Length: 99
View 1 (cartoon, helix red, strand yellow):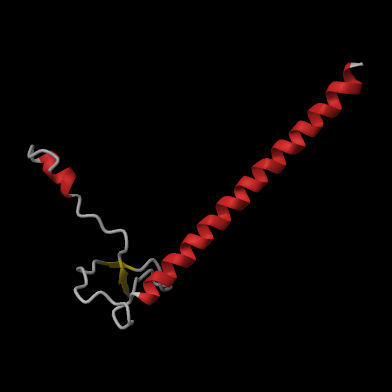
View 2: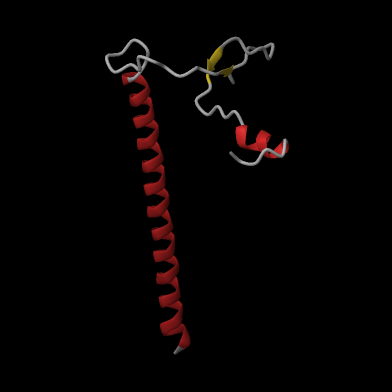
């Protein structure tokens, strides 16, 4: 009796759990792709030569590109979109508090 009822139900549960995990992964991948496209479009529309350019642009910070030549040389600078000055960390280090 056990193999007639519990085994098919267990098999269906595992299949449903796998399907649900697959749907969640697809939704996450779609969401991250759309976010990447939106950020790219936003950068395009607000670039320095665009109609919606910031007239008082913030300071641009640069980093070395991750692309290398066969000699392992990095040949160009790219904008660092995730730059952080670590002001809070240095203030805590110097015992000045967080603000």
